Image (cartoon, rainbow, N blue to C red; front, side, top):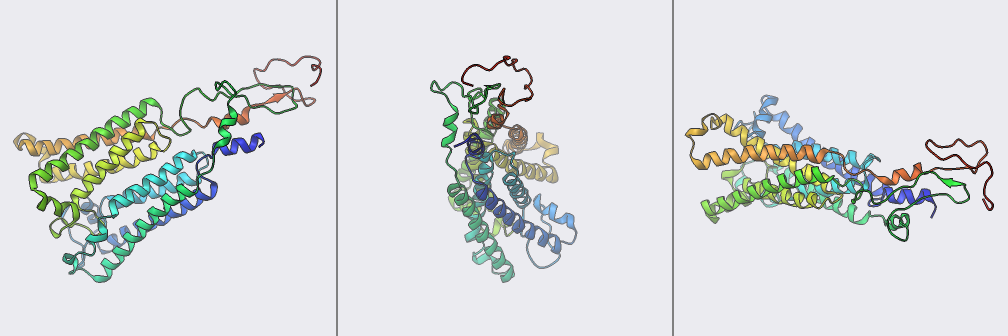
Length: 380
């Protein structure tokens, strides 16, 4: 294999170009499904701002005898699907990061849509328009199917990366790529400057995002355990698996399922980013964005009900709830900023910068290169 083929394989060592194109198409389909339901809610709202207030937990109703379909999660899924599609078509994005974007989107869609499979078929939704609930069920099944397709694309579209080892020398320290039949190689490409594959987060941002996401995930998991013990399983089950008393929108998961799903996503992303996995930055961005929306909605509810302005008069339990929302929002925002920083560069690109001189008449000497001898050594 020549140097150009080796560089191409190293640079795109996880997903083939066809797999990335197929992943971008699936992401666009997910974005179209989310956008369609957002447009539907805007069409049935008395004022467009009512949709935003409904996403923040306000009990405003549409102008028709119907129900809201979307929640604050749907615009996030829309933006996440578009961002994942862009990551697939941009060649500057390392392939491992592009694969992580597909897997993170698939995990978020699956966790947030699975409970709707049985919620949308519950008896207490019989009062709604049957065509509306049918379209909602079809949307959920389509989104789950597309999430499974994304996982299969990542699993089936992997490219073997055996050529990476060819850049190492026998002692495993540094490699030097050159062309045969030329006088000398000016630049050697080190392979072990900073451990980690292209796109992996640096140590500082990884530690920041991992610790904050882990703390937020543990806090949300602790709250779910607390509510299960406080309410008892019979009442907690309604908020976990769905009930008419906790229903707000057709495509919104039950409140306790939502909290548990966010805890799982946050803890999984924290573990990945602390290990500095190549796909961990998209996972951290996804979890942080969802946690930020979760905390912002809770804070907006506290402000609207006046709890935020009279914290001293609230019970210790209520103050702890407001404090949790504030901490989750701040931690998610900080983790989002840390995960958004660029990861390790793709050093395979530097292989193209390895230059040889002395083999062609009149060839310019690269900068900082030693001058060639007046006559070439024997055998060159």
